[in-house]
Length: 291
Figure 1 (cartoon, rainbow, N blue to C red):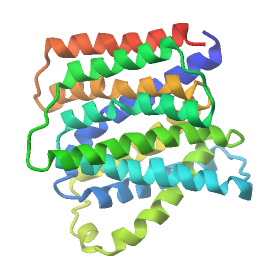
Figure 2: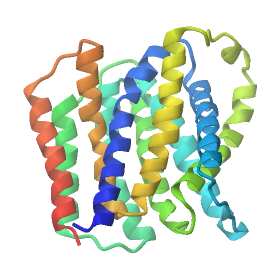
Figure 3: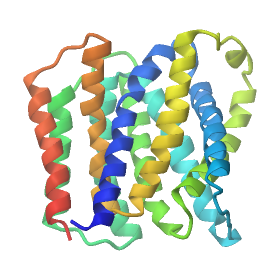
Figure 4: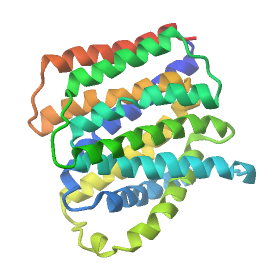
């Protein structure tokens, strides 16, 4: 494995692990903040840290108007629709169902990479996706009971589709740094979300921002899960093939399950152990043997 691919794999792994903890943070505050307002707030926090980091590092900015269409698509699909759909889908169903459905993300990434970037499909990629998907199912099981669960599933499928499309579209703006891609896309997402947030400003004013739990959770989902993890993910996507990088997304349920056990008192099963081995094995196979 070359050093560029190794660094990209590390960045993707760290980002996915950070996102694995997002469920715990969201679960703590989703009762106080509606998913739509929560996404807007996490971006508001993230943009402060992103711009601050850009100033500290003296980021050299450039922008070509011809690339606006790609940034608009990236911001609309991955940063707006996907994140809102994911949190709404989890709200309607459950975290376990969310993990199962979003495990389709690598599959969609392989398909979009084939359609848009003309990447070749091979047996290694297909085997890796199958191993990873089975691994997630082993970890969380399939829980499709509940009044609004099918509504949640539809939102989660939409989240997986749009996140996969965004991850492939990032390859269309190779001349921009990961930090610039993240800042521009975050601003576009906030512009898209603001009109909907303004229709119910009371939802934001009712939040007790001085509550330590709210402060910690907003810092986590804004500064860490969005600002830091999105930059690392975007950078990793430029260094690792999209059809392979999607598999790192599946580290989330492993981290999420461990944190649920440590912080929420949820149990661990043999399915978790077997599923973790399958997921990690799929990532290793894809990196070791893929072209």
